[in-house]
Image (tube, rainbow, N blue to C red; front, side, top):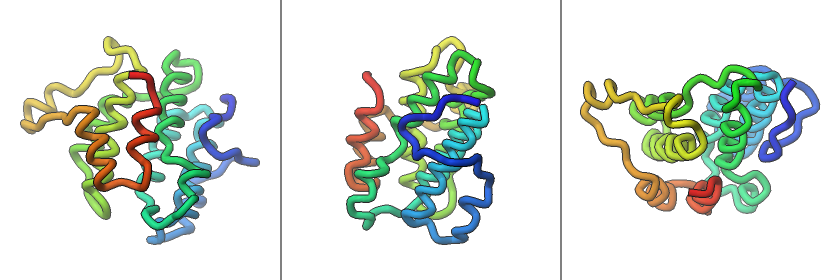
Length: 179
């Protein structure tokens, strides 16, 4: 088992998919907190790539009216950076390729809140690039050429988070890594 991520809620046991599915279409604070718990569970179980997928799920929540909730459970950018740094050695389980993952996620986003979720994925791509080895984790150039899109910069991603995201989200994302 991996050591607990200090930026995610503690869990007393390993959870499975039911922890988030039980909320159905409701994507409020309890769903968000359960997605963070599921991420911690996946991390503890030695599945960093799966933990990152659960962080993606947490970013689906609607927390615009959550008040002080986000102060207690901030957007999980620091958790993402911590997981990436800790798992980069390959000794904590399968990490996959987070840079390509976030690029593909951002360009294929659909469903509720697709625009802000896409901007969050771009922000996460930049955080991943700031932590991971550029020789091992690269952008998907063939996809960029084939689909003809541009990758917005970190500053543009933060500006979009300020405009569309949760209260204070862009500050949390910006402070997640020394750039």
